[in-house]
Amino acid sequence: MKYLFLPQPLFPDLCFSYLQLLDFNADLAHRLWSDPTLMLRQFDCGLAQAQQEILETESPDPDLTVKSNCHLRPFSLPMDTFATRRSVSEIRSDDHGHLVDLHGTVVRTGAVRMLESERQYECDGCGAKFTIRSELETGSTIEVPTACPSTSTLKKRCRSKSFRFLEGSRICHDYQEIRIQEKVKNLSMGSIPRSIRVVLQHDLVDCIQAGADAIITGIVRSQWGRLQPQRACELRLFIEAINVDCNATPPSESHCFRKEFCIAQTFFINYHQTISFAKPFTVLFLDWLSLFFYSEEKIR
Image (cartoon, rainbow, N blue to C red; front, side):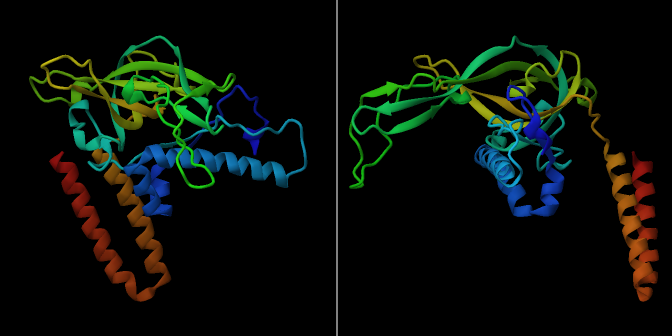
């Protein structure tokens, strides 16, 4: 409700924990990880629809406006090989199109530029209007459509190849490129730190400076290199940032296990207080957890 009172130029993005979504609906969380482009777009549409419903149910107030530039940004992916990459070297081609968490240090920040994200065209044959969006994989270029995507009432595709650009339909936003490098302390002896390009858009632009440690939650994408005759095609991986956590310190495995141990201990203590005959099994399980916890600490 409070976001409806903010001025329109602001980007009132909402962040949510991926782990909480995983506990709430595992199937939805898996769909978000496997196809984040489609799911995040649907999340944004749902967020705009929720704002519209609030405006219809609440009393009319001129200060309340629908923020069409709202975005939902997930963070805190599971700390395992499922979605967390502690170094750039761990990113593989299998991660393409998926959601990942990347830990590293920002070594370079580029200038803030303006990017045209979409524009609308009108077909001269049938008069249909459609939107063309730019793609980062193709260098953020918007190409003129070659065929009309609409169909007539007779379910026959329009064959017109003449289109007219609609003035005032161009949508632009801020754009910045940074480079993030894996931490030297996470590398083995003799390894050279690698880096990868990260694309920041909207309110994420200029949110972090060079030299700062960050956890980048984003989508692994690929961009075509320059095509040259008699040479193999080159694809360069980069990350489209969805969320940037500049103040987060990645927890160690020992810290994560200690936190899980405390949660399990609290749960089983409350459990055996509720059911009397479960007390011996609870004490035995807590003793086993303590033994395993201290053995893990000793190994580290």
